[in-house]
Length: 417
Image 1: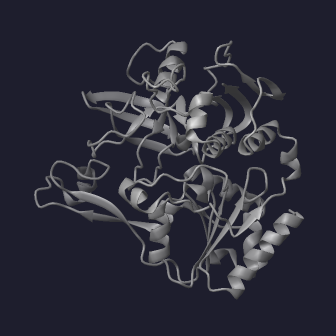
Image 2: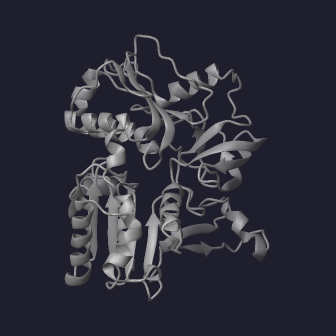
Image 3: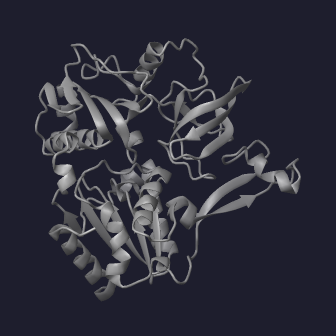
């Protein structure tokens, strides 16, 4: 790969930061199509270090697979792992009353946190990494929240520098601790990049999806009609035609749950509504999940490093009791998942309280933009909120939401507004 002038300048700035400053962090930003991630295989060579002195990481397994493919295509032998797998270690504490044998005690955690007998499972940031490591490269960094960022900064040795790469135009990560967010404000790691790529790559310039994304990002209205091959917008009051049987199609909407008493919500579709409509059009009458259905993870499964928003398809499912199912899933990153999940979570967009011994999954046909963030899909249908709600939300916030939603699509895009 031959870097563009824009990318060449980015590499120079990264080189200067790495060798001539004491700053531990560098943020490389850029909107969709500017070639941020394509620089990753070039960075260690440009800095004059070995690939074995670099840790390649990202918040999700899907993102690490993309990094891994880029590295492999350029002949670099290195593993890309999630932040969870790389920088966190498991901590266990077994209660005196645990009825299980020592070799089986991990089961008593209920696979996810606390259980009735008081055993505990948590994950702590590692105190150190391999002493040979000089640089950490983290892609999709707009998804890194305050807790993870602070863990990295406090636990890693000062000699280790961190290069965060991400789209500064996307939605900010959601912090788990709402009290800290209220006290300190939103945490936006990529809000002010140290260098921003602005030149769109040649192969992206002709993309109708990229063109529409930039239009949304700049606050322009998107008109009804065709916008290029596989890309169009239709009115919510007109004929909405898309193939619900397409396994590569997902729906994105703003509302987790629409409030019928709010005039700005009326006539708009929530995630819960979309899942019900989608399943009905597939001919599924059972309120329970069945074989072949698509699920989405609603709460971070720390023991496995499965983040919220991970998708999977049911390959086996059994009803255990009134509050749980046993399932086998094939996840969107190719891994197999097998566990006991909450039956009460279904038809609820947000993770339910309690039931810490059960993983939280829901139907995965409709997603909020935050849930879809970090993933790309072959085909996407986006249900826009009303103009009144967009005005209430604020033009900048709405443009950011729509830009993030549009850039989830790889090939086909249908906007409904």
